[in-house]
Length: 124
Ligand code: FES
Image 1 (cartoon, rainbow, N blue to C red):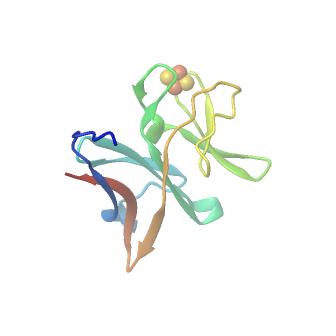
Image 2: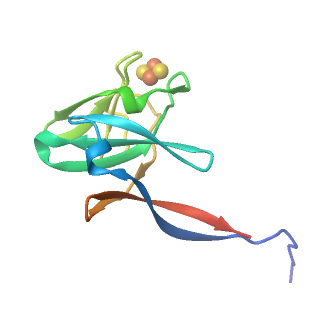
């Protein structure tokens, strides 16, 4: 038997209050900080839907996706990075521009006028 004495960390899911609905940008995004993470939160008003992704665009490592433009491709909601217009699915995070640089997405819910984002937290 091989024993690995590396510290084992557990991952725990956690909903945190990101902002109030009134703070959100209509058909646009805001940047929400959670610890060291920057999360782009989108209120896609035309579809009455909320999405959250990493704020970092993987193309040139710019913290920019919260300032991206929302749209749809074949009914799939997407965001276009403001720098070089690479687009990403807001549902799966897949890069829709043909590159292999997907982004992370997060579940979002709204309760009593507050927007919550679900993240993973590591526990020692
Ligand atoms: S930095 Fe986002 S597309 Fe280039």
